[in-house]
Image 1 (cartoon, rainbow, N blue to C red):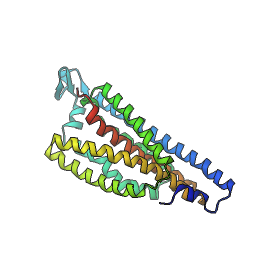
Image 2: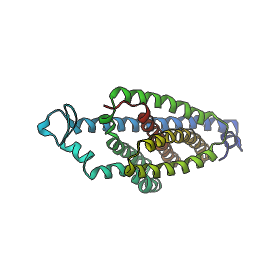
Image 3: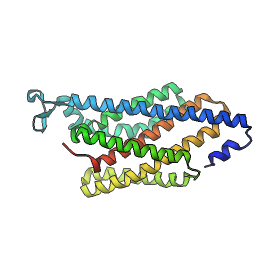
Image 4: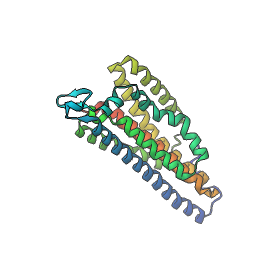
Length: 261
């Protein structure tokens, strides 16, 4: 990956460089803004589904989850029926088979809508955290994740070190991590889950810095081409990458820091 300052200065006048810097700030603002909206959609969807899935009325329940709380028919369908597998793997299937096609063929408005729809589905798949963990621990873990994410993303944005080699290594690690998680769905090993969580935090922490630098350098490399539509879609794609890193760090940290109900 070419260094940001090398890309920025190659064949550019001072006026062009200033224009690139201004455009980069607007581009990064869009990335973080889109990511933040996606996070809000996910949080609201997860909270709403969790509230609809639980009742205190045993007459309208399909199963008890703790003293005085029961699963509604909706909760039973989401968490106890084969539908849970569809909900669990739907986001991954979209990333593997749908997102690339949407980026190639869709307009920036369609790509943004696709991202927000993905965020809502992620909220559905993450709604169980409200049933498993206390609200206090969820908020505390979110704040810790937000602070860590901000620091890591700032490092990725400001460092002069090329992180592309690290990114390739981390991508391979992420694939291995996914395989281990799928295997542990059947093994149900607590020790293996803790190991997966620790490795997952490290992998997605590194990916946060890598993605931030990649988003920055990608913009600078293409800014002079004048393709605003492509750059707009690239900002949403970058937002998705950072969104996924944030959510995964949050989930893995929650396994360490979260207090279960």
